[in-house]
Image (cartoon, rainbow, N blue to C red; front, side, top):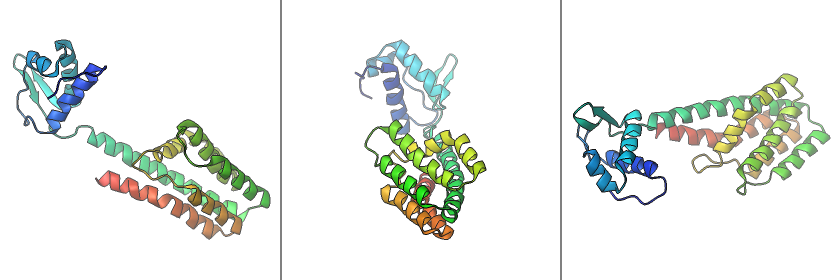
Length: 224
C-alpha cells in the first residue's frame, strides 16, 4: 500500500484499500490493520481512514465489529453486479430502440418521397462523425434518427420516440465509450440507401445490421 498524494485523499484512500482487498492482500475474515496503522501506511489523517472504511463497509467489502475492529467481508468486486445490471438494462434499451427503428424504417421505405430521402441525407451530413463534443454529437445523431421515425408517417411512433428520447440519447452516449462500438457514417448511410429503394425488407435488414455489433458487444460484456 503506497502513500497518497492526490487532491481527493478520501477517494484515493478508498481505492487504495479496495485494490488491496481485491488483490487478496487480506483474506475474507482477516482483520485490517488498525486506524493508526492504516493512517501511517497511506500518509493520511485518521479521519480520512475512517471515511474510507465507512464507504467500503457500505459497499460490502468490509464489516466493523464493535470493540474488535474492521474485517474483510468480501474480496469480490462488489460493484460488478451493479455494472452487469446496468449493461443488461442498456441492452433492454437497445432492443426497444431496435424495435422502433426497424418498423419506422420499413414504413419510411414504403412511404418514401424524394423530399424525405433528401432530408435524411442532409441530416446525416450534419451529423458527421464524433469528434469529441459529446453533447452536440448526441443531439445531431438523435436528430437523424428522429427524422427516420418521422419519415414513417406514423404519428404514434413519432410520439413514442419523443417520449423515450432521453433513453435513446443514453444509447447513443453508450456507443461513444470504448466498450460499445459506435455505428459509423457508412452504417447510417446504408439505412438511408435502403429506405430510398422503397423496399421495406431491405430497410429492415439495414437497421438490424446497424444494431447487430452493438447488441453483440453488450452480450459479451454481460457475460464477462
